[in-house]
Length: 91
Image (spheres, rainbow, N blue to C red):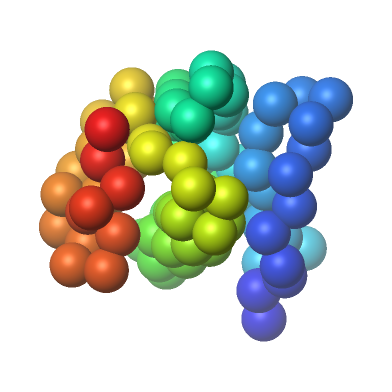
């Protein structure tokens, strides 16, 4: 089961917990731009889609807040390019 997206403002990262382990995306916010610097899931969650679910949740949050996403992380960039629903958020 996956948890809800958490915005850990102190660490400047979005987090989601699945199976007791936390995936995260480090970010920086500058005006209406959300820079995604790094996305990572714990090794046991890799290949399960955990990072993709995290990206979908943070992209939905960004859209709701009227933000554009600047993916610095290669995974985030590739995920956004492949996403029919969220690719319009690319800055």
